[in-house]
Image 1 (tube, rainbow, N blue to C red):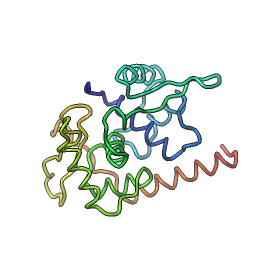
Image 2: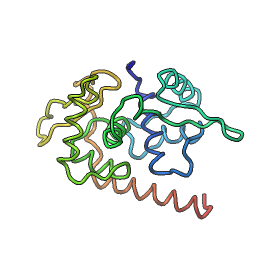
Image 3: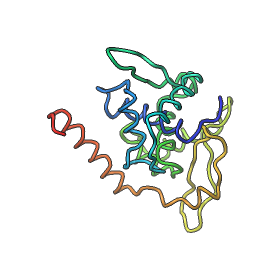
Image 4: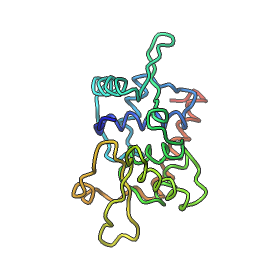
Length: 200
């Protein structure tokens, strides 16, 4: 598979995330996908991309069979095809999605931040899937990063965009804490309830 750009992984991650968090609006319109990519919560780095940027990323992902377009009604909608293309179970895709949307994380952070995509029984379950993804015969999809000074655990990164640049990773701000993750989940819940009640 070709290496993906940061925006392509953001588009793919957003499609998978929204399929699980807002199933009623999935497959997504270009507009919904744009706001998911530019979301300020649960994203690292935060991006500010245009509709044209997202459309171009979609074209590239469609050529790699990672995204499918359906035109139901007046507007085109997009869905991911990541499980079939990568031939990995949904638990592994949930882990990859969190890494694509939030950057490198420890197994514990992946378990907390991926809760809405898949509920892992414990950290060792997450570690089991990470090990499988790292030792995948068709090519590793994740890599364990060198431990940061003062850190207790190693972080993991996805390899869909090629080998991560360790220097760049080390300069990143610390990964979202569990409290921020809970706030993001609550904001999402409030959004969904507001939509159902017709409140903007």
